[in-house]
Length: 383
Ligand code: SF4
Ligand code: SF4
Image 1 (cartoon, rainbow, N blue to C red):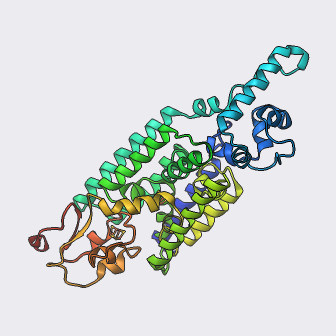
Image 2 (image 1 turned 90 degrees about the horizontal axis):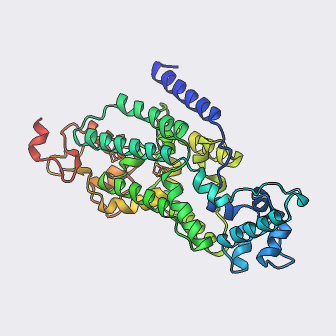
Image 3 (image 1 turned 30 degrees about the vertical axis):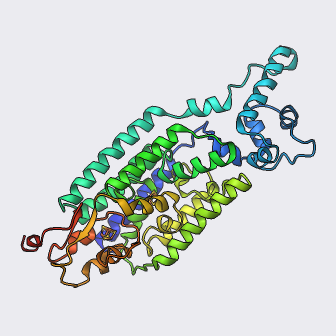
């Protein structure tokens, strides 16, 4: 094993160990999670009997209480706030009965707990750091200062900082997925999530997917494993693009028709919480595949990857190629981890996602590529 491989392996093992030691938050109940939970589990989590809760809400007597909450609510024309009201009503009744019921003190409202349970200070720190990383990466890209060593250092640091230390939430795909899911199942828009989504998207439009390339906790982890020196395979973009769009469409249709979140159980970002075996298994599959294929989750499944790929059409700064000075050596196309520079260089209408790695800019022998709002001047080739 050569030195580079040893260093990478050490970094990966350290990251995995750090993930494994990450404590599972004791109380984390998201509205979207609540909607995909079996109704009886939701009732138990709120400290009330599922049968009583169903009766209080006026659900049919033969309703299957093991079905996902969202599904039951949709079938009865109800929404999550109705659950909340019914729980409060049951608690009030229990409180009236007092000690005679043995119910004890009322359990705090779970939805209020969800909002209170969020560590807003941690979220603010995370966004401040994300913005700092975004600005730093953008400056480095625009000044053509991204060295392989710096890039790998950031790929080690980003999952540690934004995943292991600052946790799974928030994350960019979660803002898309959860916003759709919540709206589909309750008609509610959770404004902080929308603001977070807007922040991710604005960053991605100012600097073409710089957030994904440098700050996303799972995106950077996949990028890190891709650096392990093996033969690589670049799947055709038509394939990854169709799978990603199809997965997003299926998720949206199921969310609006059945009220179930099909992405949540396999969300690989939960590797940073080790909260779900299926999700960890999916993350492991993605990371193993990611040794040969560049960012498989981003390319094939990520909802934010899809949305920000659309945003790339209007991105302000991105790799720009001066075709007058380009000598057609195709080095950038060979070194680019996917097909993005091929599409950008050949002025294709829908090039693949560029993850702002900076490689094409670094390897061009005649400085015909730069990160900016326009291509480098022709005299840049002489620098
Ligand atoms: S595309 Fe990849 S890097 Fe971007 S948000 Fe999705 S998982 Fe993260
Ligand atoms: S090498 Fe490819 S992914 Fe990296 S910056 Fe260039 S176009 Fe983007």
